[in-house]
Amino acid sequence: MENRTIQLQGRVFLRFNIETVTGLHIGGSDTGIEIGGVDKTVIRDPVTNQPYIPGSSLRGKMRSLTEKYEGAVQNQPIGQGFIHSCQEKGPYLGCDICQVYGVPGEREFATPTRLIVRDVHLTDESRKKLEGVRTDLPYTEVKTEVSIDRVTSAANPRQMERVPAGVTFGRAEMVYSVYSGDGIDPARDIARFATIVRGLQLLEDDYLGGLGSRGSGKVRLLKIEVGVKSRSDYGPQPQIIAEFESVADLAAAQEQVLADIRTALLE
Image (cartoon, rainbow, N blue to C red; front, side, top):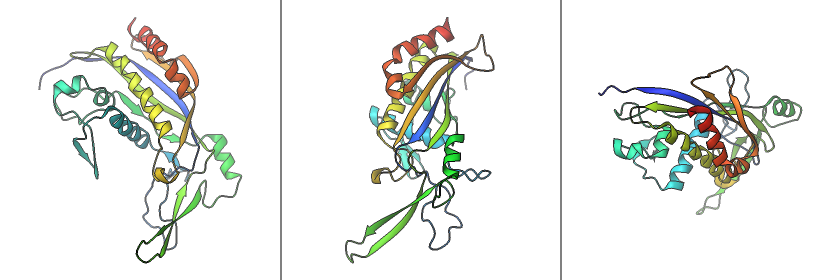
């Protein structure tokens, strides 16, 4: 393996709230569910028993939607499906998806994954709101769905646990690292931040979690904040360079945001 030099130029911090427009189901463990109980449960924090959005779910959905938007070949087995993952150095160097979301670290040409996505918990306001009303289960509702056997016409009811509509998770945080070094152009890294903005747009038009084709998982991203920390001035808190009420506002101002990031990290 060849020796390489990679240096952190700075980081871009993207923070926002996630509001459920329809009920949200991100599956948890069904271990121990009693007969007659909920068929599909949501994931919960084991300490607080509150539902949360795993960073892996948010990041994975954005990657999947971006791959479909770009028409990227699905060539890497993962779980029961496939994702796009460059197998050789040449395609990798020009692939925004693999640069942002990463490839397996054992590949010799791999550079550090650019995007980190944190878990997102209920806001205090939404937690208190849910504690103040009567829900089917703590912080959640139970939605009953009925499938019909096409041969016998027998009904097969199933109960799905969901976080109700109108609940807010936040602050969500995504951390995007910008590097320089052998074979890495920091200006190109900054330009790839647009891939994340596109992923957020695609997410709002699709769904998060499961049961999306049956109405669950529509979300809205609000109160968006963009901040930076440069290598030369890596303070305790990011310097806020832009704030937006919606993803649409962020996308509309994207070129100016990218210019401000370049100024903060490269000049």
